[in-house]
Figure 1 (cartoon, helix red, strand yellow):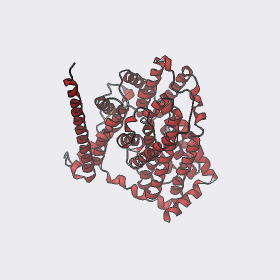
Figure 2: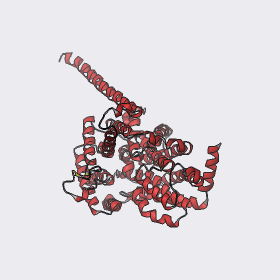
Figure 3: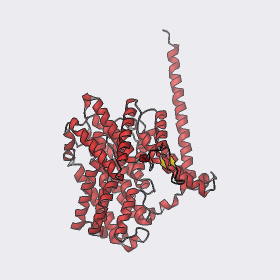
Length: 505
């Protein structure tokens, strides 16, 4: 009964005309920001943060939250139609763009929209019921546990790569090495910068993603003049009943994965989409089709992406720990309004906490209305001839990259990775494992160093802690399963060749 009373209190605030207006503004701005290549919620919220001084507390926080989770769906549109992803739609563009190439743009966008709605709804239930308890789950993870979790994340390379496993591991290793570029946090010594000041602070995730995916795809389309753009402007949104039945289970699985990973510092939508994709590749009935334009390859990551975006508020509001850069900006917005996020926030500001939770579901409805029935209008820009459109896309890519740090060198880095990404396409190497290594590599190094400092250089800490020991045991079993499976496949291959050798010519 208490939870119902709390939700009733939240909806009484969220459904006021003023808060509905701010929620709608946040969702619309977030969707537009997601549609424009290069821009994202981090840059947008940082630019709009000064406006919170003149906006009521509830309205300001609801609007900023709407921008954040609204952009999670909006960026999937450009990823699906043009293969120009933001960080949180890197995985979605793998199967989503393949569906576009097959003339199923409408189905892919419908899948992303419905899956995002399911992911948002599931995460809001988790947020409402378990926020006070689940916020403390993150405190149970120590550095050694995060090392085990990151190592387990590298296993995802075997399921997200569309080429051979060896190529995928090689690309993942390249990503790890790229993640080490910049100034060492512990010693302050530049690493792998070759004296270039432009990468002294490291390579930006946005620059890498836009270069290897967006600009590389533009270069590919310009090179292949007979296929200027795969998107013809035809949108058939309504799926068949069998197709719809494939969306829901994958979206629910992705929502569960995203709801959990959204709790962990450093997790959030980026890690959640990779994990959800790995789950679909292992448990979906249509796992063999994933990577070649499968509904499950869009539904799972989209649900995880949206769920993680919302549950990432739990550590911030319940224990006062922002788990990513966007949540750090949200924390700044709370502090600007004189509110200290943490264990006492729910008790001291119940109307604000539950109003924000309720507004997330209201925003979920707004996004469903904005991004499914009105998607034809959102996509009207893509009906422009590609010869006219691609300079505009490159312009927005440059603006988005520049706006993050106000540094022109970031634009040059993006252009360099655009060239590298184009070379990857030409030699048929998949860039998705590179992104996985780039995201997980620095986190693995940082937590490994912390674990070694705490244990005074002893590796026993990884088996003494229950969480890390469990994760490493699962990892060992998975690797053993992979090795045994490869041996069995090789044996079946050899046994299949023997009869052919005995046949007389």
